[in-house]
Length: 231
Ligand code: BMP
Image (cartoon, rainbow, N blue to C red; front, side, top):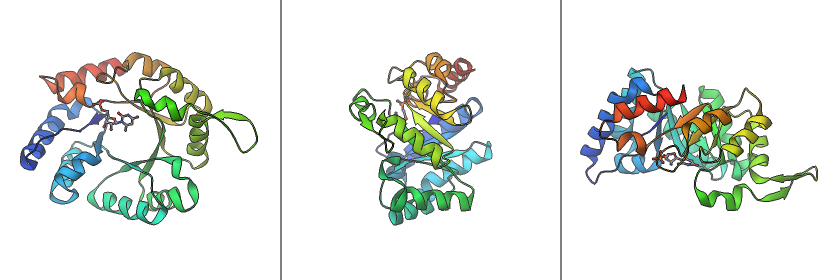
């Protein structure tokens, strides 16, 4: 999956560059992930929505990496804006919990045929400080935070989970816990040091790649390389 996180001080140039990378690399990726940084820079209307249209013309699903993590009514409002702009899926954080947190997100996603992907273990080195904390589950069994989050994803019937490609051993644990059906999305390949082969062998279904594609002198060639590696 292509993480389209380009930066440019000029919004028109940013849109043109993002669109070019998307068109050139599109045939080698299976989806597009857009981050809040691009939404801030371009706006949803007459900006990011143009990229979504381009992606959809190539049959590429679009994922809004909103990391939704607020109370229910604002989560719902944000998700509705993303859906209205044309997004097919959203990334949310399960830390906020179900009731009055992500319940509204799942409800809206289900009623509009959208997917929800939950953050279970982030790819950055500092993520260990929280996601691997040992804690006690409701049944009194000791568990690590990411295990609880993966269990929430299963219970809430999320469409997938995010586990950093930099943590192959965690990918394996989540795969064991969640079974074959749960899609695992792994960012952190390349620029953050994650190894594509190790992530896939550990059980990841989708590699999320940003800088290692869009900063390459030939982005389409880099996208093809990662696609071939994943295969
Ligand atoms: P890059 O391949 O350039 O490192 O980008 C990774 C992308 O994945 C970024 O869009 C980032 O926001 C996202 N991401 C991540 O890097 N680690 C996570 O744990 C979760 C993410 O969403």
